[in-house]
Image (cartoon, rainbow, N blue to C red):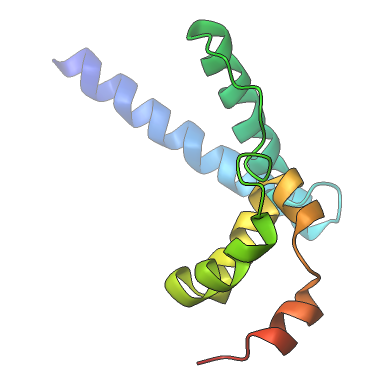
Amino acid sequence: RKEHRRLAAEVRALGDQVEALLGCLDSLGFLRQETFRAELHRARFAKALREHPCALGASLVETSAAAACLVPSLRACAGLQALLALGAASRSARRAAPSLAELRDAYPPQ
């Protein structure tokens, strides 16, 4: 029990050190935190797919023949921030989605 608490404290301290290091790299312009977190997400997702294989043949956008028709619904239901986050998280959604300026013009803040 005591060993578990010590290890948990060490893990928290390492997490704090990683956050500080990422902050330094970001502020110096060497590595944006968003870039690091996106790469970490991709690596974790790839590992999960290796450990639990499945047939994922289509991208998020390819799953709908009318992806452009989803934009107004996503904007109305989830909001502009969520729509922009989807574009940031999904390369295929980013390619299929209109530009930020087009989105702001087409869907002004409510």
